[in-house]
Length: 368
Image (cartoon, rainbow, N blue to C red; front, side, top):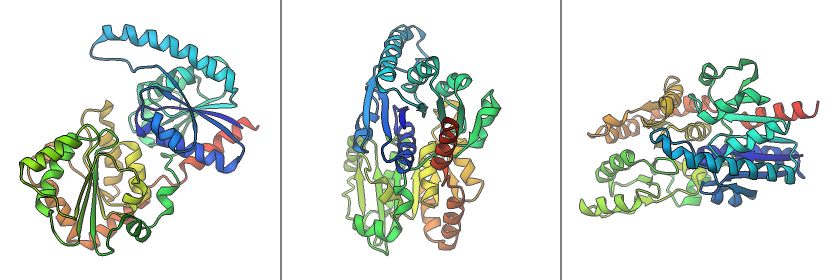
């Protein structure tokens, strides 16, 4: 079986693709899987680290604010389409699977022109432009959230699979993770991050949380700032004369996210589709802070899908100006029964068979 996986730009598009590829390889040990992504996307680092071959194309997303800048975007797109054709002809895939992001558009589109079966996966409750554009000629469209159905025209192609999560997130337990990371069994662990790029508002709110709990026994805070905010947060802590105690960890990027999620008691984060999937697969109570700057406010809808089930609390950015986040964390810490109930309800929202559903459907289609 020969498969091209394409999608990227951010971890939210890359990691679901890896989860699908892992499931394919689990079933077909000799499967040939090639990833195609953007030359400046996170996939350049993530894909090889996960043991897959990567080809890159030069492509940019459309600029909706400055339309004249799209002249260069269109020139790049034509070259990317030509490069995509070369890659497809050379690799000869049985199927092409796109997981969104502008890098996937020329590859999936070219595969469709070449009559190769194509499938797309949409992670969010409000679909991205790329997947809506590719829908017409795709064989099937997999959805991370059922709410996305209303935004697609071809209802007969839609399958609500959930968002694929790498197996490692469900294979490690809390005690193992804590031993691996050097956390004590008695620690109350708060894990906070803003996604692969970071989130300024969450970071600033977490400075207040760190200030409140710095040096508190059996209270562990792990903050992943994102690469754009790391130095600024360290400078802010220094300006406030906050000397970090051993119970506080501030890092640019959290590499072992599966271990940190497993070890945590509460997660504070944005609510991108992949984050929501990983948090719920690990059965973690969450305080979701949706980004208000995304298409269709999809992070709010992602977060509310869990909050309505009782597995999460949703705070808007404008609620972070005071001590609301510290107060919410402390309230949950002091109510273990509520926290336990949230954990159960979070786990009930998890998309545990997403990769299996996707692979079952594709294999059934192409082996008919």
